[in-house]
Each structure stands twice: as C-alpha cells, then as structure tokens.
Length: 183
Image 1 (cartoon, one colour):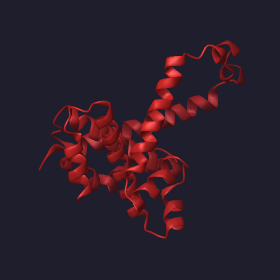
Image 2: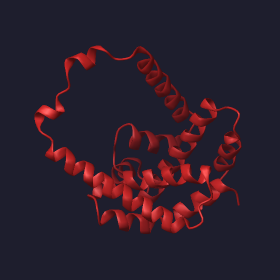
Image 3: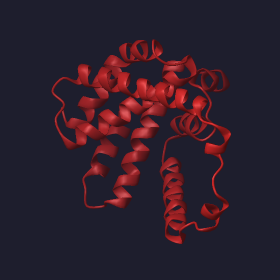
C-alpha cells in the first residue's frame, strides 16, 4: 500500500471519531470544514514523513484545528470596530506581483476543478465555492451526506494534486491522481 492510499484509508476509517471530537468543541456548521482541513493536514504530513500512529495524529490534528477555530471566533467577537477598519493607504499600495500571482493561482484552481468528474465537481464546487453545507448539497443533489463528503474529499485531493503537478511538474503526483481516479 503506498503512502497516499494509507492516509486516505485512515481518514475514511476515523472520520466518525474525528467528527465526534470536533463536534464537542465547535458549532455543528463548522464541523465539515474542520474535518476537511484535518484530511488536508494529514495528507500533507504523509507526503513529508511517515505517520506511525495515524489515528492519534488525525484526532490530535482535528482537536487542535477545532480549538484554533474556536479561539479565532472568540477573538473576532472581542475586536473593536476600529481594529477592523484598515487604512485606505494599504488599499492603494497593492503589490502588482501579488495580485498577478493570486489571479494565476485562481485560474489554476479553476482548471483543477474542471478536470474533476461530474458528481465530484458538483459537490466540490458547491462546498468550496458556494459554501453550502454537506447536508444542503445532499438535499440539492438528492444523494446521501456521506457521498457528498467522499466527493468533496476526493475533489480536494485531486485538485491539490493537480495544482502541485502543474506547479512542480517533476514530481510523480500524476501517477497518484490516476490511481485515485481509478477507484
């Protein structure tokens, strides 16, 4: 079993436990996003090093992400209005290169989303672009929430891999994409 399928199988295996841990910390509408972030963090970590205790790693990552999310939410509530207003000078001094890179990266994201299969693309775009919850997507597409979750996870994985393969073409990411698509 290669590294990529190992992290994917562990994520699928422990998703229920991850959800329970997160749901005790944050609001129900934030659980799906933190579950997805947990997958991304686990996938990125697995690319860099071997994760010996996948369950512990994923549960700890999920818990830390949930606690960070909760802390950020509490911090936003404590900010004064004056802190939220930016100086107009910063709006006028946007760096041209940053703006160009941002647009270029967005176009790469669009290309990545376009290469996804029909149902995966629909779920992924409804979740990541329109911000719908998994329950709303399931009702809209008349499929189960678990299918939505799997499609969003697959879309996220394939999009990240596609973007990495374009940005770093010498890596063997395309092989992993083909293996994952064949499932």
